[in-house]
Amino acid sequence: MPSGSFDFVVAANRLPVDRVVAPDGTTTWRTSPGGLVTAMESVMRHREGAWVGWAGSPEETPEPFDNEGLHLHPVPLSGEEVRDYYEGFSNDTLWPIYHDVIVPPTFKRRWWATYRRVNQRFAEAVAEVAAEGATVWIHDYQLQLAPALVRELRPDLRIGWFDHIPFPPVELFAQLPWRKSILRGLLGADFLGFQRRQDGANFVRACRELLGATSKGEVVTWQGADDDEPGAAPRTVRAAAVPISIDVQGLEELARKPEVRERAREIRHSLGDPETLLLGVDRLDYTKGIRHRLRAIAELYEDGEIRPPEVTFAQVATPSRERVAAYRDLRAQIEGTVGRINGEFSLIGDTAVHYLHQSYPREEMAAFFQAADVMLVTPIRDGMNLVAKEYLTCRYDLGGALVLSEFTGAAQELRQAYLCNPHDIVGLKQTILRAMRDDPAAKRRRMRTLRRRVAAHDVQTWAEQYLEALGHAPDRPPRRS
Ligand code: GDG
Image 1 (tube, helix red, strand yellow):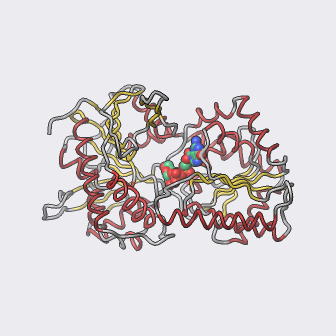
Image 2: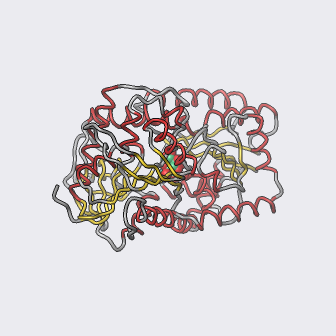
Image 3: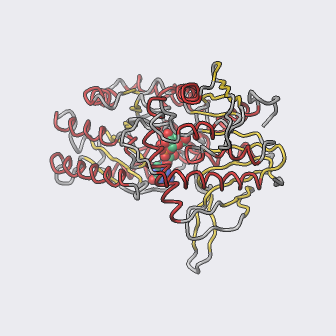
């Protein structure tokens, strides 16, 4: 296949831009704020970089274009493909299996066929734009077949894949009817990055048990298969943890702006100037533990341990995946629970739970974080959880406290947080109270240590570490990526 001209290519489900339609109907593109884009900016400074991804609308696919120094190469998806590859296979088959089967996964052969077809299309787009010997960095669970498919088209490329979500234990992964094809797809990469060491170990074990591969520490060796399926060639691949982080400097600068600080004061005032503001910020997803959190809050009100207006709880639940039934059911449950808690424990003018099913600008999020005395991050399972790191970064005043679930990737790093098991409602209640009532000096010490950890390992460091590991992939001579 002829090569393109870009020596560094990112492939992710979405392009890092949002469409902006002017009143006269003309379309422009705005870079979507997010850590991944910032990380890429820093590693692409001295390279010719391209990004392959879906533009976000099934109706219209723009021609490739340049935006803020980056070449964007849109991959078209039809409405049916969005339903089957993205909402179906990615979010209703893989997402539940990779998150401890909190809800049952749905298996549909048609979804799988579309997932394969779309991964092939992404692979072709990568092969088209990548220069001879280029480095390719593929992201996340939507594109697990792409590594092997890219390699078949372009064996000259150095290919990495990063898993933003957990990789499940083999006992759960084995439920997937297409488990071997997924492993073979991933083994097409030279280096596989995971959030936690355990995720990498789960992948290695799955390769041993389901493909008969051998392993030595983090390196898997597979003899290949004697068939025509993608990814049949023998492979030696390293699977290791490179935990993701956030753009610490950019976010702290934002949080220090006088208008953001003023907005934080306004938010507290609008909530009745509580002594303690408890806050949750999540995509509305069953992995995030919002139901368990509400149960603990309800019991704390019931026990008389907390009461409005002295203590109030605000939950920002950003709308997410509303075309998937499990998400619609979750929303109905949560909204029912919030209604019951407020019916029982709110006073006239003093609300027990402020529930916001909305999406906010970054400035508003930074103000929310600054306003919160106790941040509740209580997922049942989460690859990393960036909200925890964002909260710490915004609390440059060393105020506040972080309650953090043991089942997040972030808990591996943030040992000084108030760690909790969200399934243990009694324990969760005690941890929330401790985070509220601990000695202020002890809380400040915890915040200082936690903030140091996040600052020392920001998203730029993450990208550099990842590319360093990819550059030293086991099967290839070392090279700077
Ligand atoms: C996946 C993995 C892993 C949320 N609401 C608004 C808003 N957000 C921002 C947060 C944060 C991001 O979205 C969410 O990141 P998380 O890490 O918390 O969770 P997932 O979306 O599930 O992300 C996760 C991550 O990938 C990265 O690898 O950590 O484990 O599941 O940045 O602040 N941002 C704005 N308005 C909102 O209303 N502006």
